[in-house]
Amino acid sequence: GLLNPKMVAKGKKYFGSIADPNTLSNSNVQTILKSDFGAITPENSMKWDATEPSKGSFTFTNADQTVAFATNNGRLIRGHTLVWHSQLPSWVSAISDKDTLTSVIKNHVTTLMSRYKGKIYAWDVVNEIFDDSGNFRNSVFYNVLGESFVDIAFIAARAADPAAKLYINDYNLDGPGAKINSLVALVGRLKSRGVPIDGIGTQAHLILGQVGGVAAQLQVLANTGLDVAITELDIRIPKDVTSAKLAQQQTDYNTVTKACLGVSKCVGITVWGVSDANSWVDSTFPTYDSPLLWDDYFNRKLAYTGVDSALT
Ligand code: G3I
Image (cartoon, rainbow, N blue to C red):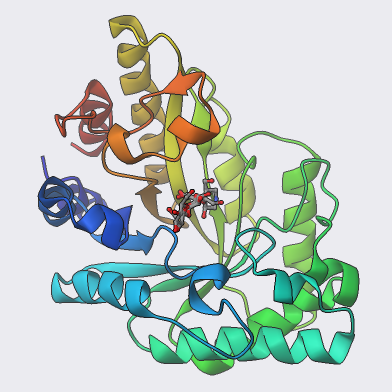
């Protein structure tokens, strides 16, 4: 047991998971977060719709509770996420002039990061800004401001909490192609413009048996010179779940864990949930199941052994 101490013994910063008041209300979740995880990412409570539902009016009830749980238990926190096209209130999407949107982004970033200043290990400053073809995603941020929205967000973030590591985060970076190429190219442009950025998060929402590219792509991201992290790991199983597929999942989790261990710039792994009972996969991918390390009844799965054996 005790994945996080083993991860730290390997020279990494953390083995993490997610939480929010809705899952922290389950005592099994709390017990496992305390036993095995060294970092917590709030699953939803720091997103724009949860924190600034109307302009300039901030609500922090759930985020505060999650931050309190993490800090009271000595856990690191990954702040998630400041500028994202999804879970974005319609009042933001309706903005059409540059000056207004610029000041709205700055105020949002500054208000969230100032509230938790000194308590956050890393922030996902921008999230999912590319589509799978490697183009900037069609969002209010890109449509109104172009690429400069990224600069605006990172510059405001560094000023608000200079100690926090600032990340760009995205999914489908697990294989070669246009998307990872675009992200790496953007990081190069940001660095050449002097925009402060510290890390790249690869979400790693993976499918059973399709994890072979993770190690090589993690190294591609690390070659930028930035820190890298696996930020939202899960490995979903096509239904029906069989013992053979659960054994394959053990192998896959072992492979992904070793991928981070094998890249010196990889600071840690976050799994996107504790128990299969609480995963986003159930509603989003109804033909898949069982993506995490504990089953619906909070028993450790073979997947847990896959991580544990990589760390031992
Ligand atoms: O809070 C409302 C609640 O008031 C309402 O009664 C209920 C009815 O549907 O919805 C609740 O909101 C849900 C929210 O989670 C909080 O539970 C949303 O419907 C639901 O869509 C939302 O899903 C989250 C999803 O992001 C939204 O995009 C998942 O929990 C969360 O795991 C998922 O996480 C994302 C990362 O942030 C970014 N990367 C992908 C990852 C998986 O989609």
